[in-house]
Image (spheres, helix red, strand yellow):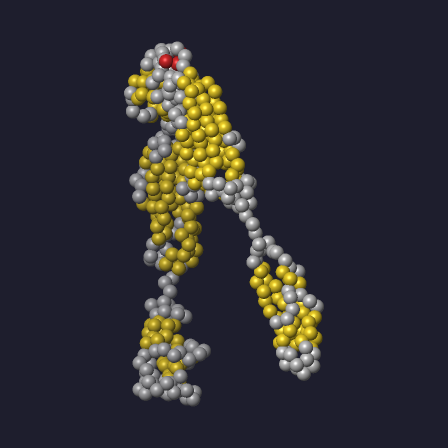
Length: 478
């Protein structure tokens, strides 16, 4: 609606800055009328946005803003890759698996809240619920059939979601459990007939290798013990004896940590009631290799930075022996004024893998940069060196001044602030603060050791008048 106040008809121009909203080019306000109506046409938009309508007459403009909301129609839909699964004949205690893909086939995200299964021997796995799938996104889960007795079985998988067309989708299941004479016997299957560790440095544990023991028959399998033989070999496993249902597994970890160089062999022996034999042997092998001894320093250079004179700083350095034999450090030579060491008594012998901590101290007695070096004499490398650096820094001083406000200063119009003056060793006074100090304290950080300073304070009123100086305060900087 447009309004006007005139005795003659007025033509008003209209415009829109958004193509989704169209308006007439002009509208006429009749003479003697104060308003006129027009129709704006709005097209659907896919996202929230604004449109500004502008009315112009006689050089004057008036804007009006419209807010447009998105017009979106969304659906949530679910699609399963199968509506029925027939497993056929499956041996008793031998699981069969069928993969099912579920897809969000609508235009909005789909949330799956549950997946349930009915029927003896049927189960689902591989889904972590609740699960949200974006449009077009899929996930796969497994439907399993593990019959425990002979005969036919039927069941249903029900997937519950927030699909617009219905909250559940189903898959019908069928299968038949079968038995044979061989399946009534316990059986053991091992994941590897032999385990080889290859070359491993002496006194260095190799990465453990796993051996999986599986009950592969239809009858329960009892593993009574797991034992290992051979120098350098060991095993970590669960508690034995253990009874495994058909299809169940247990994993044991085999370790190799040679203490001497050369080819080493051993065996992992598994004792069970398997119908194929009570003892199953897995061959083990590995080669211990001697390695050159090493001495490692935690750093090759030690920088102390700025250290105040007579205020020592200490840093720790770690020494570590590597290889397969011990390393002896017979001594350490220290150069550089102010540097010293402590924490280790030399000579010292480190076994392979052993570490020791040495404390390095920098205690400068004069200002300025200092460099030095640590030289370690040892049986691994002959000598190992570490660069040292630091800078002695004189202690910095400052003078903290505090004074009492003059009488009558409680009147805000009587006091504007203070000026602080300083004279060094009999020289003339110099003003320290370029602007008035409004408080009754001041810190002078620009002082030099060995110098005596005199200080005076004056007060300044709001008219700029300065008082006579205060009494003199003198201080000598050490």
